Amino acid sequence: MDVLQAMAARSSTRSYTAEPLTKEELDALLKAGLQAPTATNRQELHITVVPGDAPVLAKLNETLGRGGSFYYNAPTVLVISGEEAFSWTPVDAGIAVENIALAAEGLGLGSVILGCVKAILRGPDKLAWNEALKIPQGYAFEVAIAVGHKDKEKTPHTFDPEKQISYL
Image (cartoon, rainbow, N blue to C red; front, side, top):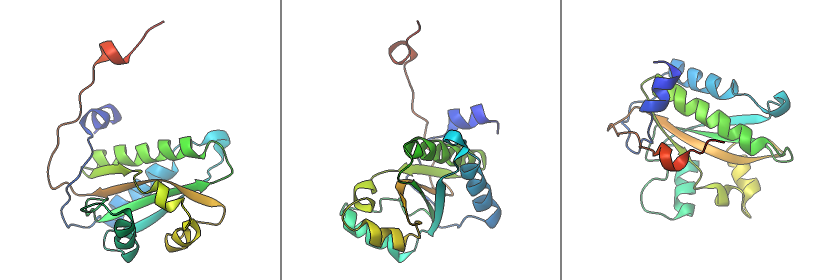
């Protein structure tokens, strides 16, 4: 699948099979994330691979306090953190997570980008969460992405170029 097809086909997956990712699939996703461009080629991002059944996800889910699984029981969650002091880290993390989402689509996998845990992971217990998620010192959570084999197909969202694009 070419990149434009992946962009057109991709939608947020909120239902996964129990099938784990293969080593090859996981390696391809990690490579896609780490190949993302970063400001001044800083390469300041770090990815923590978290299995869907990891106790830290259950604890995070409990702390979040919403019904159901915030990561939709995906078999793998990739947590992207970055240098806290570098002002471009949030942008770089956004580019990396999109690379991963498009790579997942290209591999026939589903994904959903997760930001709902940011307040918890950057809150008063940040250091404990950083330790639990193996986030390096001086780094902070930026974004996460749940990835797995789709249980259900979903139609990608539509857009209205007349309302959403301006030309000068």
